[in-house]
Structures are given as structure tokens and as C-alpha cells.
Image (cartoon, rainbow, N blue to C red):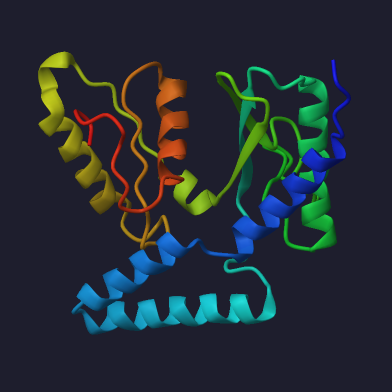
Length: 224
């Protein structure tokens, strides 16, 4: 097995966490602009202006867009020909997450579930969350970083449907959920929908969905 410099994984974890919090992707910026152009409510337009100003300040000063730094989630895809050590990958993702939190620095958003103690590291039991998947005939490692803010995470919803319910019931559930959650998930937002499989799988799929470029359709035409 070839020697892998896992310091690269650590540095990437740190850089990805910081970039995810400070640099809004172009597709999201464009989506916000389109939403502002379509908005007719004066109050809502003022909110959009405040959002744009916040993004401008973050760009200018290389600082956080939002002080809620979220729960760190890493989606790791491993090539079938990549000589990997799972323990080393997890260890380096942990260290990179801790370094980002303490060296940037920014506020750690995670606490002990019962004691509420915040170690200010964004690392603990079950954190960062790491999901693994594999890429056939590839010799590299892909890492996607998602800082999931608690405001939106706490508004997550899941429902089990019977086959007879059909796609219309699914669409109604999504729309009803948006109205029920209201301002709690800090709108405007991007809705990630996971469909099929076990309960834990659909929640993972929903998180992966929010990372798809805004406006991009699903690769399966039946779903798109």
C-alpha cells in the first residue's frame, strides 16, 4: 500500500469548514438575486438587502456569513483504487475541524447533549458527522463539507408513506412543512428531499440534495 500524507486530509478539513462558513457559492448568490428580483413584499425585500449586505461584509473582511457555525458534516467518497486508512481519515477530519474552530477562530456550536458544556472545538462524541461512500475505478478521495445550522436542522421532518399515497402526497408534505416551519429555519432556504430507503438513509439523502447546485435537476428523469 502506498504511503498517503494524511496531513492533506487534515488541512482540507480545516479549509473546507472555513470556506463553507465564509464563502457563499455562486449558484446560491444567483438564486438569492433572482428571489429578490421576484419579491414584491417591501419588508421581504428589505430582508434580502440585509442578507446581501451581510454577504458583502463577509467577502470584504473574510469573515463568517453567519455566527451559527453549524454542526460539521463531511461526505467522504473514496475511490476503489485509493489506498486508504479509515481511522486516519476520521482522525484527520477531527483535527482539521478542531483547528478551524480554534485557529480561525469561530464559535463552536456543539454542546454535550445533557450537560450543555461547549468545548469550543466542534468535535465530540459523534462529531464531526462523517458519511462514507465509494467511487468505482477512481484513485482519489472526495470530501464535501456541510455545516448544518441547528435552526434548519431542528426543522427537519420525516414521514413514512404508504405506496397508495402517491407522489402528490409527497409534494403536499414538503409544501406543508415549509409553511409549518415558517421563519424558524432562517429563510430563504434550500429544501433537500430524500426519498426511499430506511429512515436514516433518507435523512442522509436530504442533506446530499442541498449540496446539488441550485436549479440542477436529478439525474433520474422520473425524479427530475
